[in-house]
Length: 391
Ligand SMILES: Nc1ncnc2c1ncn2[C@@H]1O[C@H](COP(=O)(O)OP(=O)(O)OP(=O)(O)O)[C@@H](O)[C@H]1O
Ligand code: SF4
Ligand SMILES: [Mg+2]
Image (cartoon, rainbow, N blue to C red; front, side, top):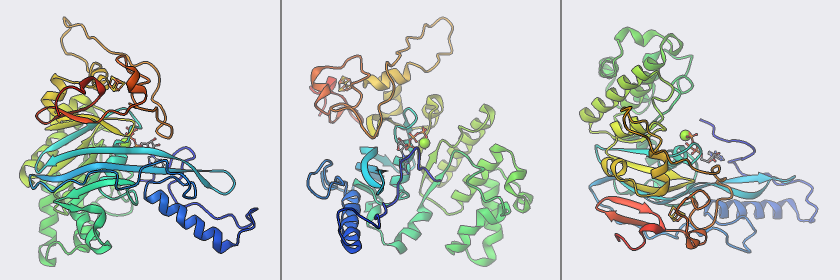
């Protein structure tokens, strides 16, 4: 899925052939390569004069804890913004700006936040689908995902899968469904040839699809069935971890429930671990064991679902959750309306990034970024209001 948006380019910049500085094309190319290297390391593209961003090793590495299938530590992903005649890097979109959380095997973590806060980029960066990370660690079963060789990564791909919001655009229109589901199984030699057909039938059955569906093409299915095909395709590779990026947002409410229940059943049967990205807080509450709340590239709060929903601590989480409708006409909703629009991730506010919209903002919030604190066991928050609590 291409995610380049609004004048922001993710690729390497070009070297202008007729540079007015009089430098040779070789010199320019060398400088360009150095700049790109700095970008990958999370440093400023300023020719090495001044560091704007801290380098990749600005975090304390975590030790592997076997109870977690996934450990994400201070993960960053910045996209360069190109501008001017020579397509120079003029800034960065700090899509993911240092997120930290752990995920236990066989559980689901919901990831919520307003549009553009970096949920999809976080999921894709964890799966190593956005090129190099800018900083931090991603440990999958204790191994740094970004240290895998190309060959190792190829086999890791089967263990770490993604399901997208729009099932139609992620399915090839020219392949029959049996081929869509089986293509990668064959490629990775996951089952002996003689068992291939039975294997695909079994996976399809688990996902609520009939054997005769194998011959049909994606356009012959409904939205819900297409999402089942996507789930079957992911499941066929026998994954351990699946990023579900808004998997039900494009579906009718009744179909949403079926797909959610299917994901839950499959999780139980195969001990799957999900990172479940969604705008829909009710769906997240239903499916998740833990929940993370993102704002402008940062995880501002995370913990057990019950703790986050019953006792939200961060002012942003409180505002976000105050919009959940209460199915009782006698209860008055105390909705907190956030003033102002979301700042740009290319030019985020100083200190606490939420300070421009926070009703509790103090002077120090404008200059000093808060750190993540564990306020009660497993409940983490990033806010100066809790500086004297927790650890
Ligand atoms: N490939 C890219 N190149 C440049 N900028 C990008 C790229 N991908 C995402 N962005 C920017 O990063 C920020 C986070 O985008 P992302 O898609 O991760 O947000 P999101 O929380 O998933 O939003 P939504 O809820 O709308 O799906 C946005 O400002 C987006 O424009
Ligand atoms: S750190 Fe300050 S500005 Fe940020 S959320 Fe907390 S109180 Fe509000
Ligand atoms: Mg998204």
